[in-house]
Image 1 (cartoon, helix red, strand yellow):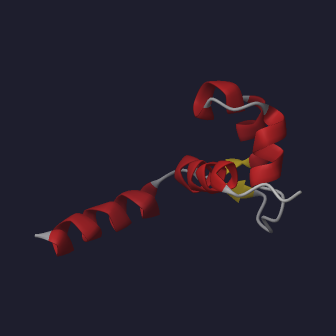
Image 2: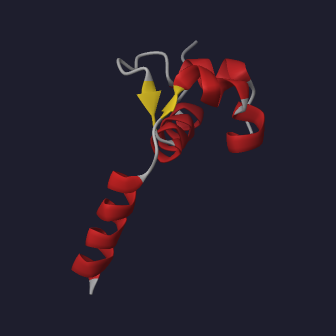
Amino acid sequence: MTNKNEQAAAKANAEEYKFYLHELREHSQTLFGVKPEVFDGAVFDMKDIQATKTEVKKRIDAFLKKEVKQ
């Protein structure tokens, strides 16, 4: 059963549309509930100029969970 779910998720990700990062940044508050500054920090080290909403959401969640170094 899990295998079918994994295959469906992989297929959905493969078909998901990629957006330019600057477009996603413009709408970061609406799409992800974060300010553009947080979006910038989350995608700072991305090499691609395009990404899916799912990829960016995962990066934002990981970025927000990072421990702050003093």
